[in-house]
Length: 492
Image: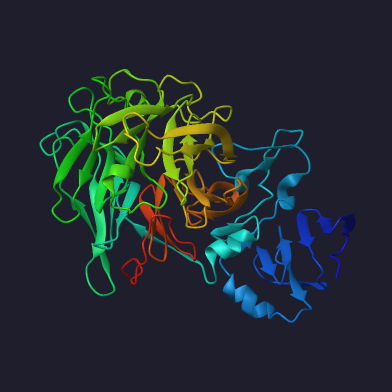
């Protein structure tokens, strides 16, 4: 059934119905599809190979009925939280349009001759956005997203032994220095098991006086390894490990040949392929060191460029492995330990004197590098690992990529300004996990929430956004996770 007053334009394997103010896209690969009017809510649906993009300004919408052996009702229920947005749906936008680069595609608006800005023509109604079919395999059937209000979260580290997530908050200011020695601080907390089916969140006492303004982190030989920014010259920026049981800490590194680091942001552990995980001699700690601390007012002027470093704890060897960034931020290795991904968050300058602190002409980019490992049996001080063949892996359409992780299939996940974006190992954007669709918005367009960082836990992906943590129950497994019999869940 063709909607009233519709016109049909045909392209190879793609049919576009245009009814103002309706934009209806249907891709039908070898299927017979019947369009019929219903009163369902507008959404993108994937049903037996059919993609439907519905944009309606009145009560009636249009659904698909597939004449195939597959049960469309079961499919709709199975993927009820997934919205399909194939690339064709936004390749051409009619008329004049614009968008704030710090906001999501859903906020794209049209501009008429009077300069008005009508409601955006694109809509998000589901938390999972499938751009390519591969995203359905990543999510699996019955993908769910739930949230829990916590303090302001920034980064998390999952510890297998205790089935806990240790995480840090964003920087907070306080005039009361009786409890915190400096005017700004971050909380160090954990979500741990309280019973057979419930978890509780608790703020922990800082492990040491050196543990000031912690940022990103990862697991390191059963311990929590944190990138600590420090405060001015009073407390140097450092790499600190924390025992998850005793909470005893140890400073692994705080100096580059006597020069203080700027404000270490994120950290990842490189292991030689085929080497046992607990073999310390073959592990290198890679970390990023942008000057955010200076521009945010809690560190001195940078003593070092914006660089990426590799550190070998057993020998103390330290070297620069990558430069040329505006703001190096998140870092992660592929599951085969042959590729390194680093985010550049130059999009956000954090300079209070910058007239455009969020600038779409600056990088919101993920770079990929090949990893050259030390030869077998080599002296690590003579033959350290290296990063070569720098190339642009991905550019995010919304803000910038912050924290970054990989799953066991090599897919890359990054926290962006509207949630988490997911690319396959070839750099193709396959989907998004939108956070904050419940946030009140203007013009009916979800403002959403940015995701600063994320961590894989058994059974899903835990994402940190402002004052909430979101848990996505998905099929993909984190590259750093071992087999676990118990899923990580929020208490009900």
